[in-house]
Figure (tube, rainbow, N blue to C red):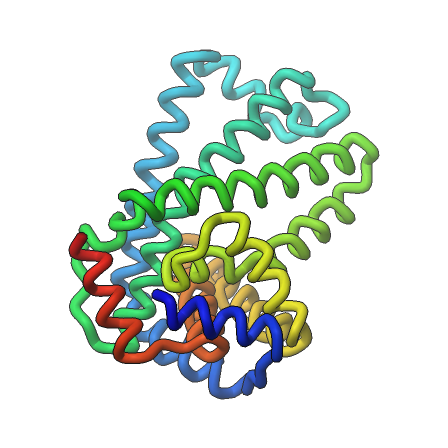
Length: 263
C-alpha cells in the first residue's frame, strides 16, 4: 500500500488534527457490530490458551508444585526464585508474540465492520500467515521485552507501581504498531518508530481516547467477570478508529488490501 506509506510519512512530518467525538463515535459504532462475535472469539481463544499453558506447566512442574507457585505469597519478587521469574517473563513474552496476530485479526474485524463486510471465522487468524506473522512477532517481541525487563528490574527494587506506569507508557506510544503493520504494510521496527512519532504529534487527545477505551473495557468486570471478554473488543475498535482518522483509507488502498489477502 504505497499510498498508505505516503500518508504515514506525511502525518509524521506535518502532524494531524484529531476530533475526540468523531473517533469515539466511530469506535463505538464499530464496537456494537463486533462486540458479540469478537467477545466470543476472545473467550474461546483465552480458554484454549489457558488450557495449553496449564497442561504445559503441569507436565513440567506437576500439580502440587503449580499450586505452591500460584500462592500469592510465593509470587512476590523477593520470595520467588530467579529461575522461575525468568521462565515466567520469557513465557509471557512468547505468549504475547504468539497472540499478536490474533489481536491484529480483531482490529481487522473493526475495519470490516465499518464497511459492513462479512467477517469469517478464519479471517481472524489470517495474520498468522506470512508476511504479517513475522513482523507482528518481531514488533511484539521488541516491545514486550523492553516492558518486561523494566518491570522485572523495578519489581526487584520494590517499586512495582513505577514499573506498571512505564508499561502503560510503552503500550500507549506503541499502540499503532499493529495497525501500521497490517494496514500500512510497515516492517516491525518502522511500525514501532512510526507509532511513537505519530502519537507524539497529538498525545493528549490520544491519551483521552485510550483512557476511555480502557475504562470502558473494565466495565466488563462489574457483576460478572466474564463480561470483560465482550467489553475488551472496544479497545481494538478504538485502535482501528484512531488509525482510520489519522491515516485513513482510499478505494485504491482497499483494492490493494483485498489483492494482498488473496495472495
